[in-house]
Amino acid sequence: MVVLNRIYTRTGDDGTTALGSGERRKKYDLRVAAYGTLDEVNAAIGIARLHTAGAAQVDTALVRIQNDLFDVEAELCLAAKGPGGAALTVTAAQVAWLEAEIDGLNAALAPLRSFVLPGGTQAAAYLHLARTVCRRAERIMVELKDRPGEEVSPAALQYVNRLSDYLFVASRFLNSKGESDVLWVPGQNR
Image 1 (cartoon, helix red, strand yellow):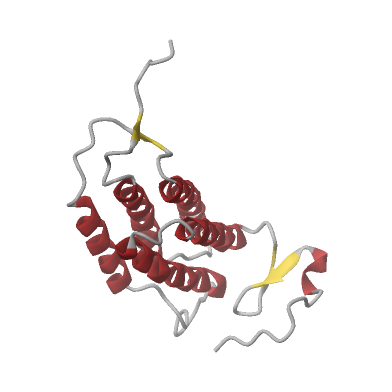
Image 2 (spheres, rainbow, N blue to C red):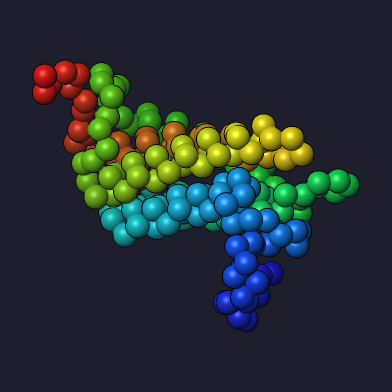
């Protein structure tokens, strides 16, 4: 259980932060950037949820996703190496659940005939924002994984990759199942 009795510690005043292992890293460290960017995704999802009251299926999934994102962040924060690995890891079951949610929502959508511009309903627009931040988090995680001495689990990468797909499909679902999507018209303004 997490207990936060004191919010400020002053230990970060020197430009470092502690990982879950106690190791101190610069606040611009790629690992810190990875879980910090996922925190941005979570915040954008929280804003989207202000507008999903009429879509229980999506809202319920977003609650679970917000919790799962903390699992991914915790795994990245632990940066566990050596025997035993991380105390908390993202699982294949979490990835499979997300895939099932994508498939369920996507089955109700009309096929795409063009790229979708971010917009439509407020909820959809915020989910598009979350999706773009999620893609940035994924890029950071891949870069982190490719650095010598750093690890990112395959399941964590898969989860974040699927999450951006889910956010795209959910945004279309919230746009009247794709009927209110704003479609790209190539060369429209030439």
